Length: 256
Length: 378
Ligand code: SF4
Ligand code: SF4
Ligand code: SF4
Ligand code: SF4
Ligand code: SF4
Image (cartoon, rainbow over all chains, first blue to last red; front, side, top):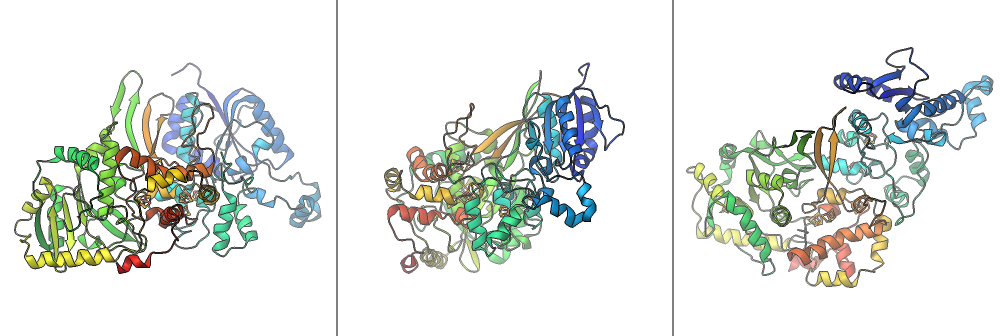
């Protein structure tokens, strides 16, 4: 083993801590993990992290929703050689970003009453909207095997390898019944990035798109599919926005 | 065999003969026997001696090939399985080898030696394996595929075409080889074609179960074969199709399909003759040891033609959809003498935007798209 192990920090901004929980739940692998890296900061696992040292890798969960979040993220960015966004909130705002487009001050007042005015609450932003992000691990929450694979790759100086194709591909590999084509249910599979091994359709539950969109979603055609099956365009947009803003529509034929 | 297609091509025969040769001595002229239908479960128990028995079983109204532990689970009167038997020979995801720095490579062979008997494979799916043999036993032999091909026995069963089958058009509605046994339903019996010495051993192992064929059995086989022939609802002409594809390279149909396609990959995954795969190394935590894994890939993915340096040969979706059709109906014909499509109908069945191979071919040919009624009356 090297004399000095790479240093790692694991942080949470505004989120449900689900991604950090996935890391904690890597029970069998957690020991091998602490064997090869020096975990300096992981509030969920131990209090009293060291706040100033340089980090080789910082994993950050959650969306930026307060000034404090923003400052914390900037501090992490300054310490970290590589910053990895983990989970859909960090990647694209996540469920809190559903509020996008609302009149923010009045939304806050609607929820909290007049006291809301003094709250430090901002519309949800993804990490990359505030600082430079080096790598991302999608999922709500992230997948344990992707997290461990990413650590292994990063320690070897490689970018994490993640599928960019759609959930449908993994769904077919597992021979699940197609909830969209055969049952006419609203499945986000064709627009959603794979990696979860089609967990939901494998239990006959439609994908709700928790891993965020594929890099080249064909929104126009997907809209035609969903509306032809009876959903109104408004409803389609609402559903597609469950985990963040709609991906910028890429005109067919120009997607990378 | 009842109907022989003059269109079937010889490279297939040569190469599949090569595969067959390591399995056995050739049995010479095809031997035909018959098995009483009510003895099928008994025969299934005999087959267990030759390997794990796998057959189509029903799952929520669909069919999948999987291991059967009780014969009553098997459904030989199925339409098509979700995934073709390809999954046994080229699994969706497999470890090729493990590597350790300083020690080298250790091939992963754990699963390769598993002996399996696949019972209930339709002609088109057997044909598709003969096509995959062209690829994996050809210029770049694939030992993983070849080993599995040796260890997995195939027992075919005949079928009734449904509204999506067009194997007859693709000359894959019957197979002359590539099976150890092939069952034809003739009522109280299965007329059984013995394709290999292994198949012959299976028949012999069954002792008195099999009986000799009578002229009446042959007459009944012919009657049913004719009837099946007339049940096809789809028909598409593939003669001169490569030339038409050549001429229609700039057709507006490709842009149209590109605008519809979601690049979801479903069509490639379920296709019995799609063989593209991706290879990647997965390292272990804290070391450079790891394993090399291969996973099914698809030319519909934006990454399929992406190369180092950020170039992509098929950047647009339209060019990718086009590539899929060209590879099957033109490129493969140029290289191997026949299209790499067997007309199983799976791709059209799964496509969420309804891209239908028959419709595409007919439009390119300038033929009105209609579920050719005349096909049923011919
Ligand atoms: S069930 Fe959903 S994820 Fe699976 S193939 Fe159908 S649309 Fe795709
Ligand atoms: S199937 Fe969809 S909703 Fe379910 S875990 Fe995967 S990406 Fe998330
Ligand atoms: S292209 Fe479609 S019809 Fe042809 S073999 Fe593949 S899945 Fe079957
Ligand atoms: S190139 Fe496309 S059509 Fe051809 S085998 Fe590969 S995935 Fe299938
Ligand atoms: S199944 Fe249809 S939408 Fe999906 S990749 Fe194939 S052609 Fe495109």
